[in-house]
Image 1 (cartoon, rainbow, N blue to C red):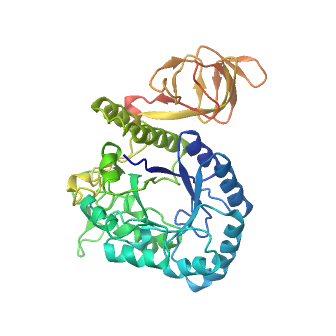
Image 2 (image 1 turned 60 degrees about the vertical axis):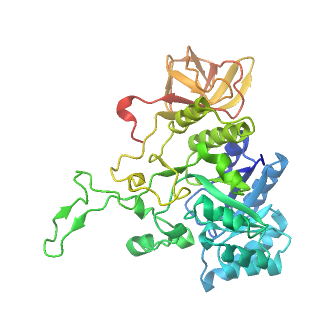
Image 3 (image 1 turned 30 degrees about the vertical axis):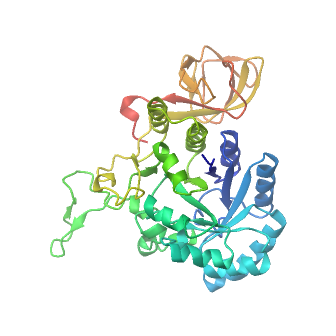
Length: 408
């Protein structure tokens, strides 16, 4: 079976390092001015080149997003970005606008052009069109079924990429104007306010001020908020359909999400040759429940997304575990920990380290940065604790949340 690429989000340098640490084959990143995730930490100027260089030194490919739908005022800045990327030399540039695609082909033809899911490639004719223009990879629309993907695969020879995990837009392949309408912030220019995740009520014209939930629920309804995509159990079907790259959504998500999702999909991809057992799938499901999500759906890969897969109840943001900290270094069984949460002596924690990720360890004692014994430390503090064999620098530490605090 062909081994597909695992493509992970890199919303900033820490997320880039985390994705690579946990097994990504490639990462995608962008500058806030030209990226549809303009509110992520992102990279600008020399930071972008440094990020590409870091990935390349680790043997990981780096793709850069220039996928906004620009207005005339944006074009000079995009021309400058093209000059920068000619120097940075990423492994590909992700674009959605035909004009931007042409600018890259005219001025930086050496950079492979990947056509974004925003271009709404939903049929073989569209795929052939982009291939004819010189695209090296097509990121297919999320509205496609497996059968439709197979038909496109039979029509073109370029690489095909699909999202396999993460948040889903309710609008057609992300072409959304709700954010612009409600907040004067264009999702198509990287300023999405996630308006589809809000709670909405119904108001009858002649009864101003009387708000009715679409369903009988005191919280209102989330009729535009889909559950998150998760294809962890169906990756072989995507390979059979001709997909070359599995993409994880999440440049706005935290390192806990990036680490957990990348690690889990890395294991799933690596297991495809031997077969994915029911026990594997159950374990991966538990792992993916440990960080914030709205519940999971297989989207439209198997046909129309079921109504039950829309997050009507408003309780979708759940997580069973929270991030405690990051291992800075390990020496003689003692780890220096950069905290992202409060930690107390006696706490039960888990290390996101291969082979022991589901084992609970008790923090028997801690020392602060001055070497003094301490029983408690706070977010952004540094402590030293004993760690089990197998814990590496850059591994994450997490702990289970109480049942009452599962809502993120």
